[in-house]
Length: 458
Image (cartoon, rainbow, N blue to C red; front, side, top):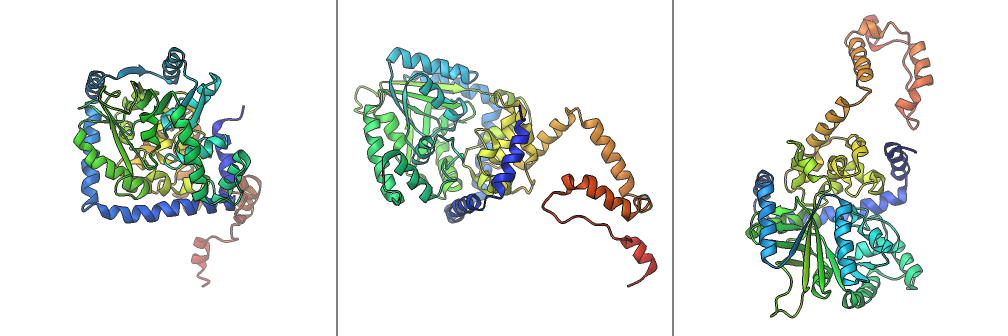
């Protein structure tokens, strides 16, 4: 079986030279860049806000276990059922029991990368449960039989023309339908699904330890409908989504919105503190919160790498990354892509062979510059690289190569012992693979600059 690293290289080469794909991706990211640039003016002192947020998340990591216990206690006090899941199998086992006990046949899902991580849609389909993504972008990729392309914007790789063709194929809409027409159709289509669904799934943007609440932020209102109409709500949340206090949302919600979409704050922000009370007309009668590990404690155990658990999932590092903008989301073969995905994927369950992604970086540092929580992503990529190289079987060979490389590069006379004729012969025989097939051949001059300088023929 071909390794994921080789698949990544092959897909990257293909996608990077797909002009239409790059045009769509660059346009869509460009629109976000413009909005984010304007949105940042919302903060009087953005650097101070980032610093505050970073310190709060540092505190969460310092008190990780205590804050999780506090959240569980308060969530249970609110009437929630709280379950702990070590891996995806545990999550699906819990979900399966709920589906069977309640005889669930139709569910709606708010956009959630965690559900992609545990492959919830596949599980629901296997158990003959009808499932509908309710975020427009997620709904589009679900119809196309694809996974999200981007942490924040699932259908970023699609043009409005390709989306119109998809809806023509699936629903018979005019293949020249405008985005507004498609949006109106999806709104009506999903409204019926919201009303008939027996269970709703969401993730969690934040878990508030102080109140045992789940905080959700979104732009389409689909999240509110997902937990308002179905009688059961299941929240699947990564254990790293913690915030200490409810007041912290005053900082984190705008910070996430600005860096994600350029908005001062997203259109819909909800705080869920348990199932509906008797006096409330809307809301689920049962609320289950599943706290999911999936490799996060493994990442936490690495003292430097645990900083990656501070991530807000805003997608800013993806939009800034020159690698992501050239090779796109699907080449990564992981749930989380771009710089943050490259850093954390090798620690996630079942992804131990994804370490090569740490080398798919120019190390330009733009990801670190744009991170709203000040995660030093390019440094974490280097830390992972060091760890991988030190554990590699090829380390001895690499050391031998670089020791000799250093030996020859530090002495001009040693370099000139090999004539230009033999250097050119070596390049034509072995150098194409290293130098690259799209570059002009590297041809060594008959005389080096050093030799020409000694003759002073200029």
